[in-house]
Image (tube, rainbow, N blue to C red; front, side):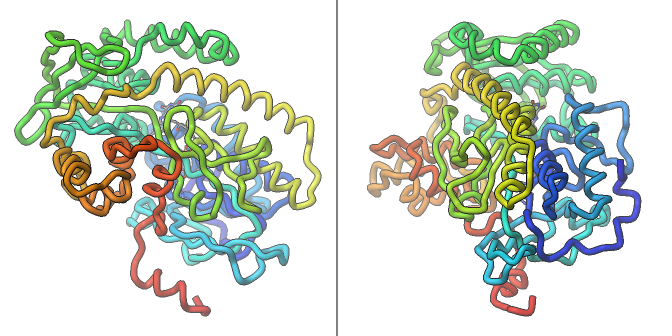
Length: 504
Ligand SMILES: Cc1cc2nc3c(=O)[nH]c(=O)nc-3n(C[C@H](O)[C@H](O)[C@H](O)COP(=O)(O)OP(=O)(O)OC[C@H]3O[C@@H](n4cnc5c(N)ncnc54)[C@H](O)[C@@H]3O)c2cc1C
């Protein structure tokens, strides 16, 4: 495996390639490797400093503790060996620490002489500090590509609750990223809450680092899985994982309570405790069941939501998935509705790392086949059936762990919905009831949720649901309108000006 401590190859990323892959998580790595092995020239742009994405996030390879390795590490190592091999062969350029902020159709032809895309990149946080990774493309701001494979993954979905803006409240994925990435624990006594199986690795991961986990509070009920036995059985490995987590919960004495939610988080200048209550299947609190638990860390996770900016920028169609997320529409080869644009992994629907790897590989092979290269069609068929099994399981998971429809009943008037712009629940209600705002976009214009630094990535789900659109706040046009972010990352004015400069 090439270590980022070793000097980068003395080449710059070619400004023009056959395929640009965005993201080096499970989907992007698999897609890039498959396409490069099939013969395409590929550039991988990744905002992170080293490959692996969210699932295989690991300690800095230059300094990290090799004892702590994420799940599926052997799959990562095998993929990483192939990634490094195609990189050494010169068919794959890797640009870590760079973020794609804009995509447009290119006016100059890409590698094969075909018109394609101009992919504009900027340094990400991982690529801008003194420890930024060596990169083959630090000076390559704009890549020209015949085709694109978009694998940007996603992030934690959050629901606002009273007190969620206190220091010590974190997204479950953020807690896990700290633990996996640096072995840092952000508290001594934690409560983990929300819905879905992801709460389990977060809680057990904290416990393994010595944090006392006072409980996991799951809004769903395990009996919901009974309806899904057929779909769950299609991926037997998941049952083994579940058994492993049950054993870990017992070993660390972590209580696991279903049909429970946190209705309020308490503290003056940081978290001191939470109120937990029993709820019915719709999320209505059962009066008299509230109790307080002391803690200094709250990890909240309501599933994940994909990052659709680049899919929208590329002009590809989107749809609403079973979990309410806006995702890219793809065919059974990973092609989106936009010619030359492929998508794989979480962006096509939150489904886990195994599906992401299979989808990435299939999309990479499809890009190669569409470019006229020979690919193994038996392998493609095998990948399709594996993806179908994984997607069936993912659907079962989403149906068993929905966001409770009555969650907004836990809000108070002064609950902050948009933390960037400090917009409260009362502000949004006022815009609806007195200013005539009846869709998320108008609410956004009149009350300003989603107008701040994160551009609605954190509050977008809540705002769309609170806007009370008559056709259903979760309708695709509303979600697409709130997810449209012409600039996918913050950039400097100089970078913006360079768009108009033919010499840069
Ligand atoms: C915080 C978090 C923690 C998770 N932990 C677990 C876990 O413990 N167990 C589990 O089973 N699943 C976990 N998941 C889900 C799991 O990560 C996914 O199923 C899997 O990683 C999806 O792979 P992917 O390649 O689609 O996306 P990701 O792994 O998310 O990779 C996407 C990559 O794209 C990069 N990227 C995004 N936008 C841009 C851009 N504009 N320009 C350049 N690069 C970009 C990101 O930096 C990232 O490296 C987690 C998800 C999140 C969000």
